[in-house]
Length: 128
Ligand SMILES: [Zn+2]
Ligand SMILES: [Zn+2]
Ligand SMILES: [Zn+2]
Image (tube, rainbow, N blue to C red):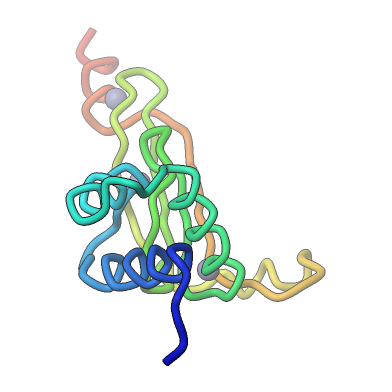
C-alpha cells in the first residue's frame, strides 16, 4: 500500500470540504470548517491549494465587499456601487463578447464594478 503523506491527506481534505460548499465562500469560511477536522492545517496551505485549483479553472474568484470569494461554478459577478451611500447591488450580465477583441487571451469569467448614484439617493437629491 502506498503511504500517503500528511500533505496529500490535507489536500484531499480541503478538496472534499470545498465540494460541500453550494454557494460562494471565502478562504476563512473554508479554513473554519477544516480546522474542526484537522487542527494542524494552516491558512497558508488553504490559500496555496485555492490558488492551485484556480489555475486549473476548477475554481473562480471574485472580490466582493473587499473580500476574495470563491465559486466552483463559473459565474460572473457584477456590482453597482453607490458613491453616496456605498450600497452594493448585484446584477447579472451573461455575455461580454464585445470585449473579446480587446483581450489577448481566453476569457474565463468576469467581474464588473459599476459606480454611480443609486435610485434611493437620486430620489433624495431630487427632493431637496
Ligand atoms: Zn474563471
Ligand atoms: Zn459581490
Ligand atoms: Zn445610494
